[in-house]
Figure (tube, rainbow, N blue to C red):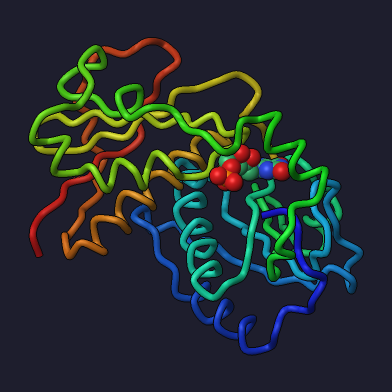
Amino acid sequence: MRSFDGRELQRKDLDKLRMYASEIENPFGIPVEFVFLDAGMYGLSSPVLSGEKYFVCGKVAKKPYADVAFGFAFEKLVLYAWSLGIGTTWIGGTMKRSAFEKAAGLKKDFMMPCISPLGYPSGKRSLQETVMRKAIGADSRMAADKLFFEGNFSTPLKGPEKEKTEDLIEMVRWAPSAVNKQPWRILYKDGLYHFYEKKDRGYQNESTGDLQKIDVGIALCHFVMGAEERGLKTEASISDPGVPTSSDMEYIVSVAMKES
Ligand SMILES: Cc1cc2nc3c(=O)[nH]c(=O)nc-3n(C[C@H](O)[C@H](O)[C@H](O)COP(=O)(O)O)c2cc1C
């Protein structure tokens, strides 16, 4: 959501967001810190937004899996915000990064990959938002048989295994991603769901880490939260099945699901 109604964020909503953010965990045990900032006080804005009054920034120490952990944790906050009727947009590119990093007090050896506005929907998309969404095809997603596989990457997930996870597949399919690239691929093998990153060039740098690993963290969040909503217990582990892949694919993490 990029068009807000210009209202200040209500104190009670901000308190709930702060409380929830302080308790967010992720499967990698890497702390992600959230900083809430008044846009007017710090002179913060983004050219793709209108009517926003508040931002949240996320900070994480630079280390292996920091980007995936960041994606998981920030998405949890985004989903919680929407449950309160507060709109958000993941923003990793279209902002004056140095101004946000300064306002959030970013320190050496930490990164602040993305920020989000926090506000109430205006009810009508601005022209710039409509144009942008159209340009990146933001209202559509890839088909499930391009994202979920079984045994190897030539065989789409089908049959009972697919039926069992149809709802989780939809939750992953509709997850947000940078430029709507949906760079996650999931391979079901030996009872585990293995998450991979399908890399494009230009998404990795010092300030943001790997934006597409963040996307995989977001997809993982949707999968795990969807499973938990169904009453299943999930366990994430690093269990690379060693399946041959193309050189643009990187194994990230595996998830087991059990009846709890
Ligand atoms: C890691 C990440 C970075 C993003 N960066 C930007 C950004 O800089 N500017 C922007 O307008 N949208 C950004 N987006 C939002 C995506 O464009 C959006 O999620 C995608 O087009 C799908 O649209 P939807 O989330 O409304 O379904 C980003 C999303 C993610 C997950």
